[in-house]
Length: 267
Image 1 (cartoon, rainbow, N blue to C red):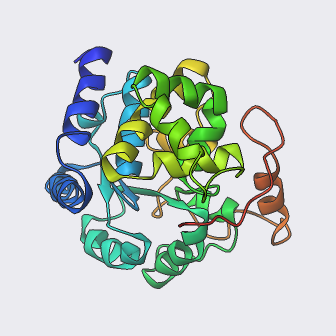
Image 2: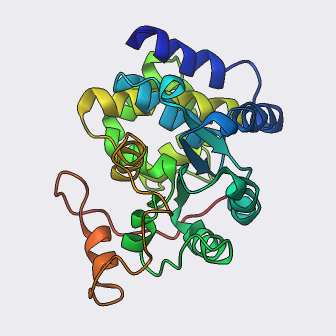
């Protein structure tokens, strides 16, 4: 299977005619059907995360099916404990990894601890266990990676730029931060969100600006990654609690200072 075929598989298989709960349920069921033969299982909050990682793998020329890497959307962060317990019988030879939003980081930490996978206190310790955190969320990471002009270029290519301009003029969003407007427009419907997550990942791959959490996660399940069976929660050494976390939050993969975290309006 070549790169073009893998990209088409990512588009058709995950960005099909269904959206919302129907697509999420179908994606979860399909992934769970493959876990018994997996060598790595990636737990993500939702189908948009699954699409993002599948699109990134396709863009990097990787065949996750052949590698037996399965990405499982769990239907929200609060399900992490249940899925870790469900996957426990697969044994330590199966690598576990995951992705969550910053707001759900503590839920993932607690779930990992309660499931006996580890006791991560910092982002660095989460990463040692194979779990990575998006700041503030997946769409924020992708919008920063592609840049406002690049995102608007995608809107234009999809025939959505006029709709976005109309959205910007709405009283509730007029005068708001540009990246906040982009984020809300992308998230305004399930089908639009799924479509643009894939397109934004492809654009980030083309620009070589893939967000660090996605890049690191895909690398972690590429053969050199660590699993809970090979990683100790104490493996971060003598680093003072919070020190690695502050460093992790300070720059992006290119060494550029990250934007300060915003308290997001979800309306």
